[in-house]
Length: 332
Image 1 (cartoon, rainbow, N blue to C red):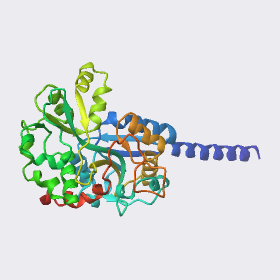
Image 2 (image 1 turned 180 degrees about the horizontal axis):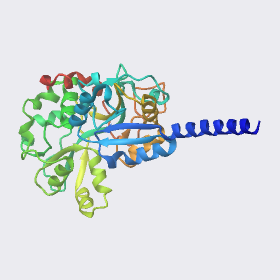
Image 3 (image 1 turned 60 degrees about the vertical axis):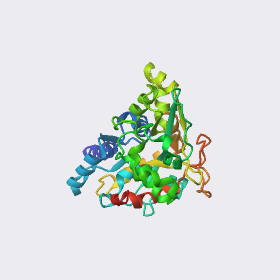
């Protein structure tokens, strides 16, 4: 009887240990096209709250997407985090649709794929910057780029970069000739051959190498909040302006999340996606990454975004509409 009792205790302890071990092995494998330091606070917070271990691989989108395709069914990647939607153009064959989850209903329907292959996580805008050295009037509308006075006045990164391609596609999706005529030869705007990233364009602007720069809106905040005093000095010399379409809206792009086709930990991927859209997590995007949240409390009204910090009218409809141009590069 004693031996039988001990055996039952051993079995119970063994079963309990296996359960604990299984829980400790819960993990999520993410391919991120965003820099580690940008999403580290969110990943760390998620791990503490969920107990799920996150294995993060960071790299350029073209390399990680190629790896995902080559690995096929053997891929261990569960989730993709993109720096903009254009990186997922023509990539649905590498993804799988996801079922609805709790916080999805807090996202504007224009920021979610119709077949639920991706969901927007945060919002940014490609904006125009001027400096204390700028002598020209600041363009207010995209159509102002057609004016001769702005030719040879801009610092912009490589025009083929995904940030610029997303902007061009969004403009074309609206279909207003005045907004897009300058796209026939955008190089006319350039003061120099494109080199470097968005931060480099802002540095060049602060140094007086151009009258204006085009960059994602949050880079000014990053420079201003940097521990580097040189970055702070650069930020103090710059001003940000929201460009408008003929409708008065400002074009935006979004970072996105998508589940891979052969995700071995799909349920954990869904948990993470839901976490990214929690109100508190969205506040991290705003306070630490200086991006705009996609979360809206009013689930019955998804036509507007609740954010007093926008100071512009985001054109949410153009986000999804731009994909038709992004999936057909010849249209750009």
